[in-house]
Image (cartoon, rainbow, N blue to C red; front, side, top):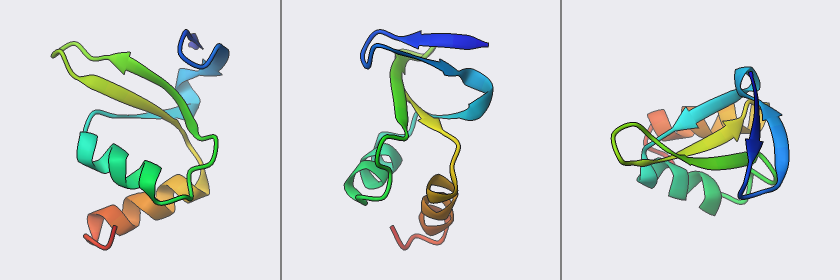
Length: 72
């Protein structure tokens, strides 16, 4: 499904994205310096939380593995 980011003024495909509601994880990703322009949008989740929409990419997978190993 194609979505439009009011925040970044661009279209993106939801199938090509990962949704992450964890604020600490999002902070660590943003602070890593490795995500470049992978953040596609920030949306309101159904439970009143902000959800970051990230484009799937090898850099994001690398950060996820570091996050799981508590090295990030």
